[in-house]
Image (cartoon, rainbow over all chains, first blue to last red; front, side):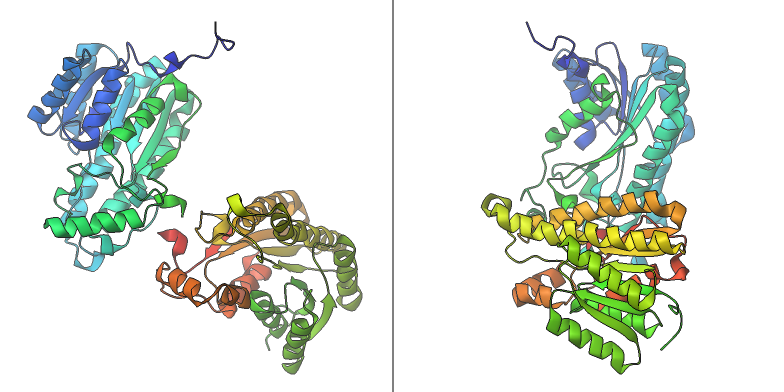
Length: 272
Length: 252
């Protein structure tokens, strides 16, 4: 028998809870959706690319989890509303939202940046987070329980040198907005039993985020990765799978007193 | 000479060089009477001479800030010369013998703490008594460091810990003494080209410059400008703030 019988890692389990993950078709979203599925949640895998969303759902079912998929454009309010209605119709409740869908543009410096790129990135990364959050709050208020996890970025916590050719002002500004929005949601809805936290990932390779932003040649990418290592205390980039534990923690009752926090997952990038 | 600080009585610790000297000269040049408190008598006499050359009012006091009786007598001297204290630049700092934790002798740890934490506490203790008794409010500016905000690989573990400690102390003062109209703020300089930094060596200065968005270290006078502002009436609604002055180092 354990000496601390009231303490149990079952707190991390999500059985019976319904989780919506946006941008679940690739990269970090795929990891988040699978992690929630393994922890026992019923996962709604949502992506603008329905086939990719369904592939993630299939991966979850393949390992014995429960998952459905749907198409969503997070920047479109009707599409987001449809996502929330369909989730409730099919699963009856909505406990967890992971606001993960995000894009980047070519990493132009500010004086060269087309306004279209500014608007396009903010439409998904900022407006999309607002719309999805807005759509799930009423149900979470009825349940008096909910956990929202937004995906910010270390680029939302401080400026990043353009030498890295991967981050531009539209992206970093949108992620800064997400960090502050997280705190606002936490303060506004704490009394409704809803928690809201953000993860600020540092450099994680193997995602699709940089497909527009990154330099094209393999030599360029290798040079950049080498520089990233040098600038990271742990001297490496992150593996997207490493984010699973933090995400499940924030989603679950293990984090029942944690809200309004923006947690860097960056190998120490922001610690110096 | 200007008169923005006319009627103000300032104590500057660590006034024999660097940011302390630059700030003492700046405060005096704006009309404040300044008590120069330092363990380095020679350097402190130079600062006194520089202030007198430009027509300022100052006295120089030998003071080891880690010694309570010396801090008490230094503050009494400042009061005797100029009246109750209204400004403290709590700046004396020390890093010699510091290192990485796994190799750091506890005596070396304590030596740094005795000046950077205990000394900051003691200087504030007696300045606060004087400010409260004077009844006209006051301003304390404490020299922290970007090392008090973020991890740095420079092998200054006791120093960085002390700089984090004074940030918390500054916030406590701000909250506790606000009813006396005494304000307390901390500044967090990045690379400043002081004698202390120059002792560490040119390689350090070069490396730190390259990691600073503005690409250089600050001159002590650039820090003095911020301290003068925080000491003046122009900042009368600013208290409890922790202000990096670091060429953008912590913005990245």
